[in-house]
Image (cartoon, rainbow, N blue to C red):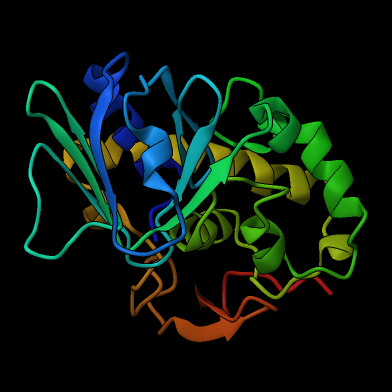
Length: 245
């Protein structure tokens, strides 16, 4: 599943399409009435965590890549795209295996921009307040909660917890203020490292915990376990990562 940094990369790549008018649109299911897009100009591209937003004058198309979503710019696969956009200069944008939603409300009414960990409006104090409202939440679930940490996915979760030596099944309420703040700061910091490494093609090379078999600190096998309510896979070391409970 693409995480926040990957969506920022997509947003940067499609900037040349800003201001272009859609001349043809296709959708391989009935989730979106694509006739609404014809002859409409793209006014902007935005993102909120894992959500990619294509803005038109009176509405926005939200794209969520889910687990296996992909895209093609000025190319396409043999498989029909979930959403395909064509422009008068023969350029095209194609999105596959993604979820589509039409948003007619103002985006400021839909999204809490302060929850996006990579936004200039990110507000860590607000995240802390939301976490305190759910004290029995495991940290693995708190980090993956998009209303608290929009843009954090399983890679960022695992790397941030390893770097801060926090066991993924630790309870939010059991963390000290110092440790909680350390976890939050590391998640944000790593998200920008993720972006830099993804652009450089070195992301996987620099993973310390995600899909690794051995702890690089203690040289013991990592535990691989589906943790929390989300049942997403965590990779952790029982020697150096403390369980707060």
